[in-house]
Image 1: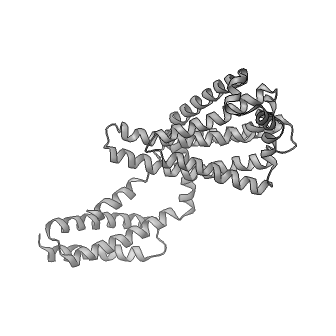
Image 2: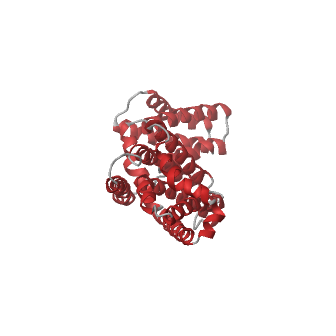
Image 3: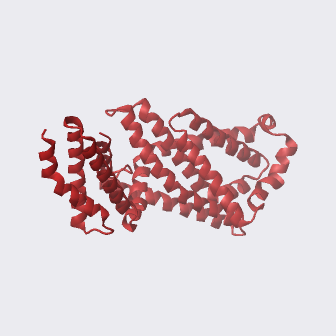
Length: 331
């Protein structure tokens, strides 16, 4: 390669890329031109590094590409339209695409909790292995109901939100290992099943469901989503399919970050319901009805917006432009 001739031929393109990268706003045509020039310059850098690795030219192009990439990503990610795409396309697309994982997780967990609850309710000896009769009476008469009114509404909502967000984050963070998620799910099933069984055995099943269902439907759904997506991440390296294990894990990992951000809002809603609706003086049917409406809204978000987003090609992963913007610079 004649490096001098190559630089002379392409220097005007590079300077145009530099100029566009420095502008605060771009028209649609200028944004397309910026992307096109970026991809060309990335190819030029790769060619120079392999055929005529001149340090000065390599440094110039690397700096130019880094500046252009930062400007391009900033423009795309900080606009309101990008925020809207994230909320109404990216998040529901991932939730819809992983639906069988978290629906399966929810079905298995609920079934296990019901079986455990019935077993505990019908066997006093089993109850005694978990909790003493005195502690069980205290739970039924005071502790279970008092839990929801122990703190002020705003303070309790914050506590619930942060706790559940932490549980969801752990499910996602530990997803690559798989087995810790199973343990966390079992702990949750054990807690709900034992408490429900004890309340039912003392004739307070109505109180149990009246207090846990208003917020618990949406709250547990969020936990099941996090756990299901974490298990999907685990399975991506166990059975990557046609992709390499690294690519499969990278794809699922990026998508799960989208889920983690999306669940922040879901858990905020469930925390508000738990703090302000569950302990309220509303009739039981009204409190449960609010929880059911919140759950229906979430499922509509997933199965209406999510299905549409997937049909439009959204996956929740970074788009092709971002992936192509990274590889040549590293090359």
